[in-house]
Image 1 (tube, rainbow, N blue to C red):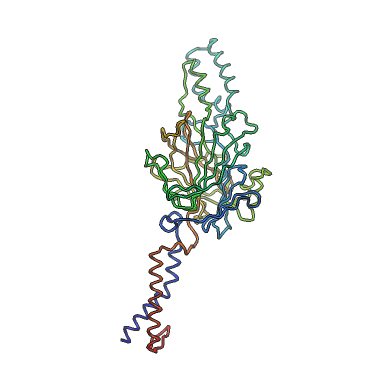
Image 2 (image 1 turned 90 degrees about the vertical axis):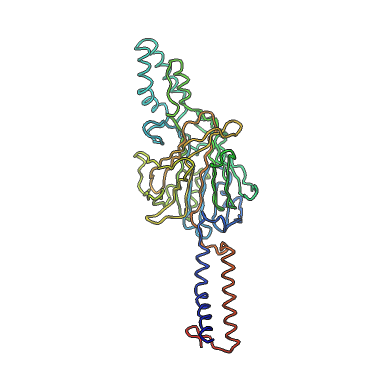
Length: 450
């Protein structure tokens, strides 16, 4: 009996020692794997934080965005650790030409100078000469094309030169899904009159989830789906009624029997990814209030990013070089994740997207899916990312990246109920065993049971 009692108490002692370790292991979870553990994330809203921001605060993540929609910018961090603040800034859109590379390169902006030096010299002029020689028809075509170039819009529409309107936020409950919805809409273009058509036609529709949700945007295409963890934000980048320079060129060339393939052009969303310290939050506030530009980038502490399994150092400014391509996976297969990193250490903040986008008709019905490409470049302690979309004509483009935290701090409340029951049961068993020994008036010693 003494040996048996010793065994029981020894086993109880092991449970006492391992109980804190078990709780720690259970409570350290991945935000990506919180589907079972985290069913509903409480969100505390501060509508006018520091008179600049809308603030969403949860036990896991804190999110900031401009309270009056001045410019589309998102900041987020661990609620219990604000030493690193992650920033995504939407800088603008760029119409570009595609030649030997299927992704964005800044040397191929679709502006009149580049069009004249590339499409005209290499594709249009030789065909006009073949058709007209050097006769009056050729001279007339040259003059007409020169006049056309002057009427094209620029290649780059900077978002900080536009007025943005914020709609929401408002809570949306759809079945078991719950999220906060808010939209940035480009409502006015300043100083870029050639882009007047973009007003009310570019939106960044944001959804901050407080439940883990799997969404199927188009029920006719169930393979198009994504799961978003509670505490992550998904934004739809939406462009409607885009007026392509290549369409104007082809309209002119039609009377001369010449056509430039539409797949020679695309549209890129330029996003800057940076990280700042908490004490530098004022630099972002200055940008929102339009007092300064590029202050976040100037104070950024980002040393590198992980793209897949590859570390990329961003401390140097390499913007005088060509952008590098992202190796995207097969359509409908993988997400592309870009994660903040420091040396060999992967940090929590990330931006990810699927390598395909939807094309919608005027009724909002999906008519096609297109492959998405991307390129990037180190820009001195921050990353310039260009998410690239092929020519989509008169359709509406919709693409939905996600930002969030890849790993969560310790949250004991996230322990699974089954595990909690086991731990509670073990604790009760220990208490019963110790009480039984005391009733027998035996001395319990942590090193030896008498």
